[in-house]
Image 1 (cartoon, rainbow, N blue to C red):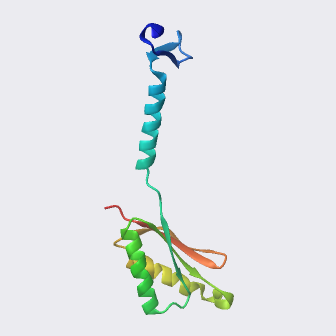
Image 2 (image 1 turned 90 degrees about the vertical axis):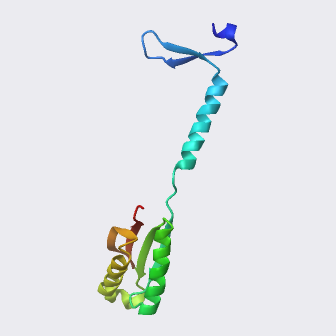
Length: 134
């Protein structure tokens, strides 16, 4: 039947009793399958992570400036990775770094939600904030 119609005989389910086959144009089937996969891939969203770096003794003006940048990143739909970098002996100000990050989380509460609370990793205290869904 497939030869008469100029099409291909394709085995759909080889484990079934009897095996299930279908008469179709195999090249067209493969083309449409690739087209569907490409469309699905295009719809998948890519996660963008923006970083903001603070020092443990960051001043109010600098903090406000960086907070505004963080707010803009979250409104654009990117995740925010805020971290306090401790260099040298400034590691003794761990509590100040944590207070700074918690203050940032509180200020950005209406545009984003905290995904990971501040956590010390080596010389960095890192916190992740994800944008809120609209």
